[in-house]
Length: 179
View (tube, rainbow, N blue to C red):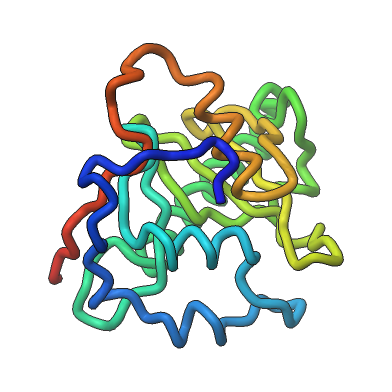
């Protein structure tokens, strides 16, 4: 995880994980009964709370009293849904291009966010036999791009398309923030 062979800005020193709720990471269930995808669980166990490729924040489950966890992802999920409901009402078909459709929007759930306002989303209606969800990107909340069948594949796709800054660490651990 991920196949893109990330390197850490801290040289691989243990990450601060005291704020991550590992019990919730393992016990959470989506409406269809399955838990978090294995690639996401592996990412969180391995890297904790971190900035990925200098831009992407992937929200872990955190203990009460900490910011930047799955609660933040749920707020962003509502922002995503509101934006796409408005787009559908206005018949902005370009919002679901190049890879999506309006029916899929309701099955997408935010789990990551870029500092540019782009979303990483799981399609929770399409769980594979191995427990993985396809990963989508909504750039500027104005398009839908299928990135890959797992978080590992999606991160590889993101890394392959990022421009410049090869000296920037792939994964930069971030300190936990209290509310």
